[in-house]
Each structure stands twice: as structure tokens, then as C-alpha cells.
Length: 274
Image (tube, rainbow, N blue to C red):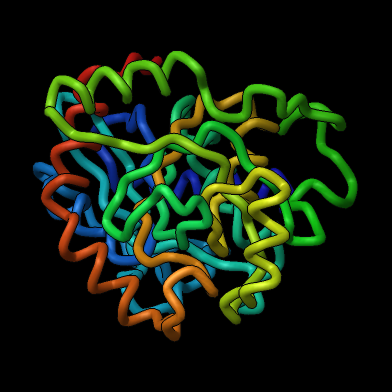
């Protein structure tokens, strides 16, 4: 995306606000409920924002919700875009570019994911410590605009270590048991085969999904601080010998939403942002 396109979308959003957002939230399948907690919200449907795609997946409302949450001005994406919807990687990650242009330096990305690690169970929350890009492409392919970031961005600490530690402390303070692990990003939309899951486990993957990785790559390119949280919505193919459905994903995220809300709100309360 050209920087003029990013600025146009950013200005459109800015014109509707009286305060400056300081923290970005990307809310995945079934997790958009967090946006309902935002005080004095300004709601902007994606289809009103210049150059924004539209979310086509159930469980994704398709709007920005901007306002106060736990003492911080947040901009929440209530629903995200996926490569499997037919969008380009640049379209998928466009909102992250817009967040940066709005002055946001920190984001929390969430998703529903399949558990690869056999010690996990549906309903677990997993802090993402690292990821594997298994999508066969990157949102950074193509000409690089130095105004947006370096040609060859460092990904050695893609998920901010201080934020991870603060998240662990938040879980402990709430008495929540949370997992940590490596998230594998696949294109989807088909779920993985049992053989693919065995391969991903061999690679070191703990959870698998169809999002997040492109957004985190762009956030790192833009020098934003990132915290990632997966809701383990089901065990991946071949582990429980049962078919996988998107309905199960939404059902599980609905069951754990109170823990998810408590956890993320506690994190937001303690997170240092610029």
C-alpha cells in the first residue's frame, strides 16, 4: 500500500476522534466481545474507511471500536482480514499500517487457534512467544518504502519480551493458568490434515491458525511492540479423532470469554504504552 493511501484512511479515522488512540487491539474469531467493554466508543464500520477491506467471516463484526478501556485509549479491530478471503497480504495488514500512522506504537493481537501441543486443551489461553510463517508468502514482498520500515526487518524478538512478562504476571495475579508457545500461521481455509499437524509439531509449533503472522510482521517492520494471545479453540486434526468445524471455534471462545476478558483487561491496565 502506498503511504498516501495509509494517510487517507488514517485521516478519515482521526477526523471522527477527539482523543488519540495509544494501543491497538486485533480481535480474532469469537473474541470481539472485548470491544463491547470500551467506554464512550466511536464505532466506524470498515466499509466506511477508505481502502479498508471488509471482513467476510462469521464471528468477525467488521468495525473499528475506539475509546477508553482500563484507563487507556484503545483502537480495537472487531474482526480482522485473512489471506484466505482473497485479499492480498498488503490488504490483510493495511489496518496495522493505519494504526502506526495514527501514532499507535503497541498492539495486542488475538486469535482462535488449534492446539498442536498435546498438553493443551480446548479453552486454554496461550501467550505467543514466537511464530512460524508457513503461509508461503510475506506482506513485505515488493518495493520497500523506507518511511514505513527497513528493507530487512529483524524478527528475533517479534513478540515483546517485557509485554510477555507483564502478561504472565497478570495471569498470576488473576489466578489464571495460561500456556506459552509457538504459533504457526497457515493460509487456510481448509483445516490441516493429521499428517500436517505431525509435521508442524516436529517443527516446534504449539498452536496453528490462519491469521496473526502477517500482522505481526508488519508491526515489527513498523517498530511497534507486540503481544500475542491465542485461544485454543479446538485440538488440531488427528489428536482427538473428530471433525473440525468453525462452529466449534466460536462455541469454545464463547465459553472462555470471561477469562479472556479478565486477562486482556488486566494486561491493558498494566501495559506501558507511549
